[in-house]
Length: 73
Figure 1: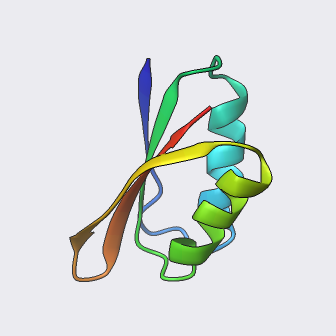
Figure 2: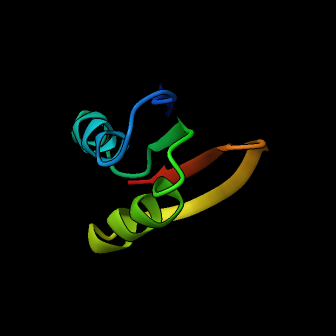
């Protein structure tokens, strides 16, 4: 299953907090696609994923100051 979480407009660390809450509801193998525009998230979201043993399957820039990261549980 793939779930989309839009966190645009939220300043760090809130994209990570929201992602952590959303990930708790997912099953192993599910993916969470996180849209964000907090520059710090380009480092904090991949670090959060690695710290929790999640795999980043995609990380793309979607605009001048926005990104999308896909994390598999």
